[in-house]
Length: 133
Image (tube, rainbow, N blue to C red; front, top):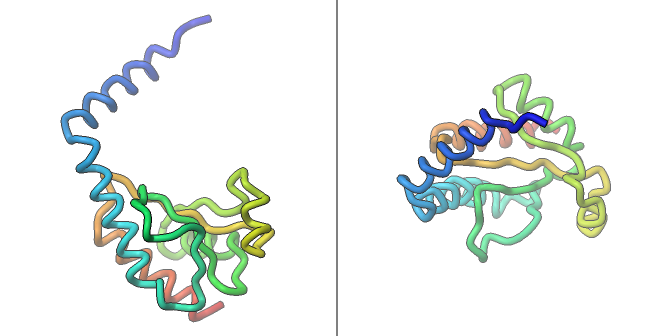
């Protein structure tokens, strides 16, 4: 078959860009952005997190809002604020059963191109959603 030349070229450029920035710099930014999320909701009993803040974290976090179906939270974030998240079981139904949330969770991710202002928007949106639901 035909090789995915465009994909290979894109991957090469992505790796070159990451090498210029430095992986550690990207990791630190992602960890800082996810840290804002923990700072905002760690003491709020309406929120539960999968995993801990104690270990170094990449820019990925799964959570639930008490009594709120993950799909509803995801739809509200998308429709009102244009924030895209992934909801559901994330290919790990057993993990969600352990957390007593068989319907899954809400997964948010950050990356190099996300800003602190965008994270502030998500934090504010989730506070509103938790207040409503």
